[in-house]
Length: 387
Length: 126
Image 1 (spheres, chains in turn yellow, green):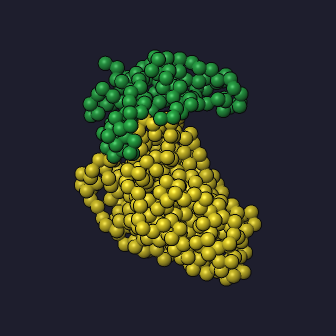
Image 2: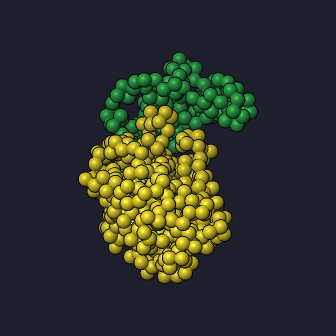
Image 3: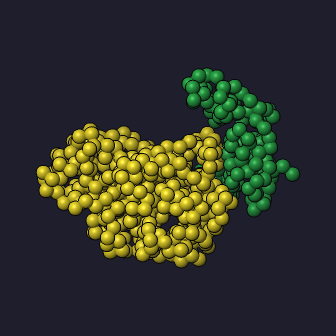
């Protein structure tokens, strides 16, 4: 099986850009990725593009060929929707396509969210939940993860202050990241006294509503060699999992089997295990989500990850730095762009050209974890440095 | 509002005091709409009476709601265990601060304040 190399990555700055269309955002991210890859656009053989709420926010569907157009590419193009895991799935399809024989694939995603009101964005995001059994009962996404957090506290202990340490950590990591929506630090008191969204979450337990795009150029090992590309980071593992759609149908509300399955498959694919991982970018759409991700990926036993940030273990200088980009929490969460943005940030962290790369000078193995809905979908990738 | 087949049938049954779940030949429980047994693909699901009361597994008070519930906020959403199946509903007739995991609840249907649409609700058992 051919190795899949990440020849180039690119992102727009994440943040409030309500006037920028999804196509405008993706055009910029794709241009950055193509330039970073030093690959001719004409070499791209296929495009996989993630987007979740384009019909709602922009009355724009059928975005695959649109994404290819604005990337300057003529190639078969497909849009993928897996809620907030949409571009993680796009990356996975790209990886599979290279493994099946293609040489160059463009992957990425985009989302425009701030051109509609917060209430409308809340409604749009809620479409990732069960329209009958959850939405008609008034469930929102902060509400869904709050249900998980309160059950977690009940089963394992922990409290709002433990979660606040996760928000503080991820904001701290984003301070120097010019691509992040929030380049400012918080203290615990800021988090605990913020406006309540859905108990136990205050505003700073929640990722923001963001506009942005991300892209990556994936190439085969043989193409990289033939074209003398500088592409030291490879995708060695890819895994995907699904679970019962509605939270109420899960055997447990404090475990995320879709992520457990995706993680096991990705680690098995890569031939590495959780102990080999030097750095991780995980889907912290809400503070509790980082806890669930770290436990699903076997970095921590169930009930143990709630205190990881408080103990300093997941900080930049900890045993396992988590979300050095700032995570969804501080970097921002334009939902369709998030999965590939994790790939973009982790690639730079491992190559050594990320603003936080100095914190992990010897890192060679990284993991991304990208979840959709209440983790009814999950995609995990293992990235390794292979000079 | 146009009816959602299966879900609104379930709300009708709750209003009639006869809530039910669907049971496969193998004893697996499901909620409507579920025309086929997912394990076998056969249309062998039968309606069974849903036992009450249920027990709250988790809950949250939503302060920032989607537009269809904005006049209802703040409101309490909970997932409750009714034995064969769990259900999601809004907890009524109780101070939100007093809602607890493990609390016994019965089922009901009320109207939302914002859009006057039917909502599955839980009532605490005194």
